[in-house]
Image (cartoon, rainbow, N blue to C red; front, side):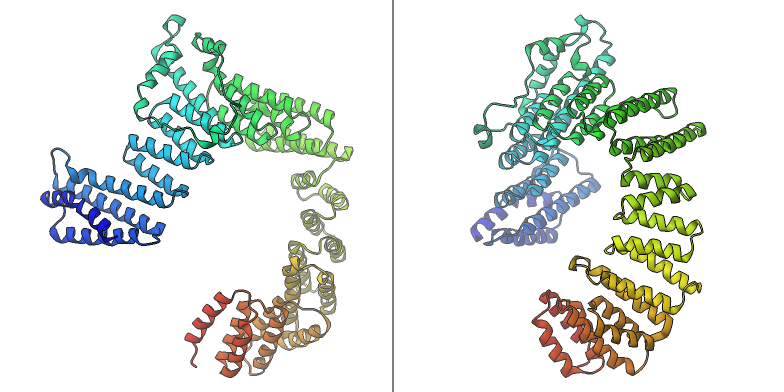
Length: 636
């Protein structure tokens, strides 16, 4: 180990002598650099070096190189670059290489090396890094995409980028990211060629620069391109899913107004993509988004729309997407937008008649709502409001209302008598949707409903949805508000709380938090109503009658701790015992109990409780850590 470290240190001598000669670093600083590097080298040569050791070494070298550049600029050192100008980046690359020999499977580490090489414009090294990374991780689409992106955008080699994406897709045929990136590459390349033709004023066929010549130009860049060996996965695969371009298409690409210039190659990629991933509508939507970023791809977009219509004839989302193509990219303030809306409305009407589903009505209403939000002209806004009124009513009359349609309809109707009637139908049809009940209760309240009527609404809601805490919160807020306004007596509210506690008693453990909430809210109200003495009476009585939660006792502890009396110390100890009995796995409750015992000088009791807790808590490590912090602050 020492010999290897010494060898690496001796290789630094020319660089350090050059730095001293140029007066970038003095002797003391160079001694410090040698010491730092020696420590780092020994850390890397130990039996089990960690990734963080390599990263710290890299970070040190990067900071050192930045300092060297700043001092060189400040000293205004001119002349031919010397060994110290190259040594820093070379050393960083050497550390990355050693790190990745140890941690070959660490993809983020590969990406860090790629980022460093990019920032330092090390093109030849980059091609080697990508080749090695992809050979080790052929199933990582992000690596193929980064490599292709570098070839296309930085190395300006479209051919190499295509080859990389094609090989990536051969190994990962179901990678949506790779298919989308390949289409994006072809469309961007097409846009570049079109722009080149426009700038050069190419209008006639004999003036057009054949595509073959463009490819020949790129062959000159092959010196730096990524060269991949045949991967093991490729050798095992049959030669299928090849993305090929026929001789006829090659001839088409040479024509003046050729199909290539309107996205023919990208569409070939798209057709291959949907063969590999045939039943994913969202995947096709992403292709549309890519096409829509490139001007002049309308025919390609139309092809995608048609494939969606043909392949998803009974999918409401697909049919809605196809209909809304009439507004794709149209300015909401233009005349074309109004014409597009008419076509969309007609399209939705036809599909609704054909499918007749509530989901299709949902899509139509969502469309109208989006249009209402986009336009600014008041007459148009009024038109969409009326259209929504008619749509919701028609869906209601046809008996195809879904819970989403009811929610959207109630939002649209807002606070009106019509909304109350609709909400009544909604909760009758979907009694297990708590959001509908919450809206219904608010509407009955705001429209002058009596306390008894509103109470009945909440009773029905909670009968069907006893596990929904949001409903309980709304109910208790309303109930205590009514009590403070003297609409209900103490006994009436107490009975309603007891009914609530009984309602949630049978909830399974997944809804323990709801039981805790209901019980805790009751004891909080009792304390507000009758003070701590009444609260003590109630929690003592309930502990004999019901199975109470740890959360309930925790709330009681908080109430007792807010009192300043000698009596509450005895109550607190009893409550802690009850809380722990209800849930002895909770290490934080044990810690709170120990804190109470230590603060009141009950050290023997605290020792016994600590011993008991050690054997039952679920998180023993956290318990011991918190306990030692606790006794560190206690005066034992």
